[in-house]
Length: 290
Ligand SMILES: Nc1ncnc2c1ncn2[C@@H]1O[C@H](COP(=O)(O)OP(=O)(O)OP(=O)(O)O)[C@@H](O)[C@H]1O
Image (cartoon, rainbow, N blue to C red; front, side, top):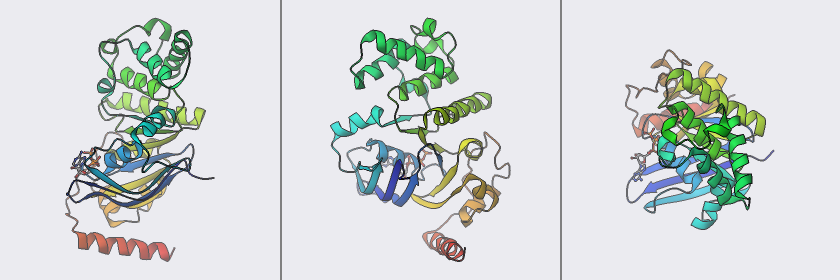
C-alpha cells in the first residue's frame, strides 16, 4: 500500500543558518502512529511545519513531501490552506493557544467544519456535538456553549482534537500533544489518539521528547539528532535493539525506558559531525549485514 505521508530527502534551512533538517526521508502508512523523537532543537517541529506548509517565509524547503501521493512542496499557500483541515491537521502542546478564549468551544468546532464544507449551521452544530462526544466530553450538547476556560487542560486538548478531526483528515500531526498535561491525563489523551486511528484509520505523526509516549502508542519511531533522522525502527526494536549508537546512548541515559513522563535527556556526549558520521557508517554496515 502506498504511504499516506512520504517524505523524501527533505531539507530545511532558515535564512543563511545551518540546515535545521538534513536529508530526511520517511514514510508513514495508513493508520500507523509514527513517533518522531529527539532532543530540543533536533528538527522535529520543523518537519511537522514543513508537512503542514507552515514554515516561515525565511525557510527554504528542498526535497519532496507527498500526502496520499500528492506533492505538497511547491503548492501555493491557498492550495495548502485547503489541504490543512481537509487532508491534514495539527495539534500542539498548548491546547489553549489553539482555541479562542472568548468563543464557545462548540461554535469553534462547528466553524472548522463550515470553513471546509457547505453545511448548514444546524448540521455543523450537530456534527460538533457528535465530535465532542466522540473525544470524551460528557454531556456534549449542554457543554457546546461553554468557553474554553470552563474546561480542564485535558478536556481542552480533547476539544482541539475534535476540531482537528472535524473534516476527517487523513493525517494528524500531534506536536507534543501531552507534554503540558499530568501523567494520568497524558495517558488518556494518548488512548484517545490510539482509538481514533483505530476507528477512522487516521495516520498519526506524533512528535515527542518522551520515550514513554513512544512506548505507549507508537508503531514505529524515528530518532532525530541535529536535523538528521538517525534511525527508524519499530517501537519494540528501538527499545530492545537500538541500531544507532546515539539511540543506545539515549536509552542508556534514560533507563526508565518506556516509563511515561520521562523526558528525553540531552545526552552527555557531544556528538561531533565526525563521530556522527562514523556512527552512521557503523549503523549502515550493520544494516547491510542484516
Ligand atoms: N522560525 C525559525 N527561524 C529560525 N530558526 C528556526 C526556526 N524554527 C526552528 N529553527 C531552528 O531549527 C532547528 C530545529 O528546531 P525545531 O523547533 O524543529 O526542533 P525541535 O526538535 O522541534 O525542538 P523542540 O522540541 O524544542 O520544539 C533549531 O536549531 C531551531 O533554532
